[in-house]
Length: 313
Image (cartoon, rainbow, N blue to C red; front, side, top):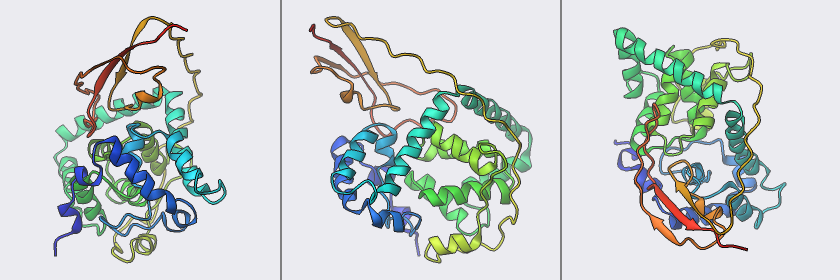
């Protein structure tokens, strides 16, 4: 029997427009309280995601802002009732701020990724193992299904992402950077901060001495017994010890001069420029962009450049 995710595409899961994002938010809000807290860890499989918000691509590309999402949730739930969902939104924001204040961590990831890519060119065995893992041919139950689901739908449940990363690193023994890049290429909500730091956390780099080990009983419990792999690693030792770098101060945003024309660039990382606009946009100029960062996948959402004049006071 064909898997359900074989018929799903990321355009079906995440229609790339603001109206679809708002509709998704409105549909999720009633269940954002205690139901979300009780059921959020369950991965029932593609097409059965009513226990999670499915808002992450829209928040990631700022079609919806964190503030907008939380305001909608708090209009129907108390802070205590929606505490778990609020925490998840704050974690995403925290990781973005953490990496923004430590850009050397991102640069170090890119350097390590480049070195591991070079190893792929020279090591046929490693290349074969990575290819098999990415194509869902690792012979690890569950993992192969998630690899195919990721490529075919552009999405994975958060719990499956943790299991996948742990199996990639500790069971298959593959370089963590290549797994993180695999996610960056295919996830529609791929966020450099959440993705990179999440993989570092699983590997034991982000939080010294702490790793994440995928367990068969945990996978079976939270996948409704769809998967129970019997060949998982039984230990997860940190890849390396690394002290977290100190934060660097963020630059002060410039004051926009009233009465002068300025340019606002919207790109795949931030399509929420409407929240920054102090006045009605006077000019809209489509400008397609091409992203050249290693491992960066073009967004499902279009890119634009907006120019407008800030009126005098």
